[in-house]
View 1: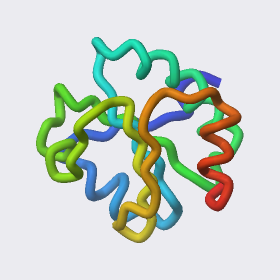
View 2: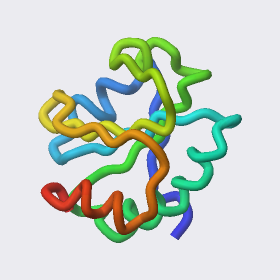
View 3: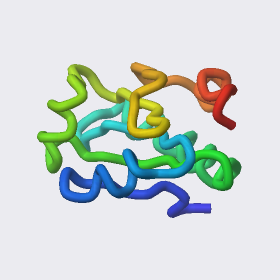
View 4: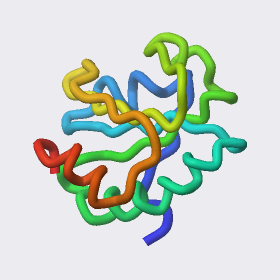
Length: 108
């Protein structure tokens, strides 16, 4: 099941996220962020279980500050759902898998 999520960078964010033909959940995270590590397994599972409906992308804000700044990411984990290049939903903070799935119910 590991490896269901995709990694994005400042350089390929537009290609992987904004130009996607299906909704994309972007997890803005950092190595030092405990809650980010807590939520990672849930996001992997959601990515694996809903691969045909939604793409789950991880973006490390320390390595890719331009994209994080462009979307005003102030606290992590923040998860934005992008559809047709626009942010259509924002989820802030670590939540259990079931709660994230509820937040994503219109997309998965």
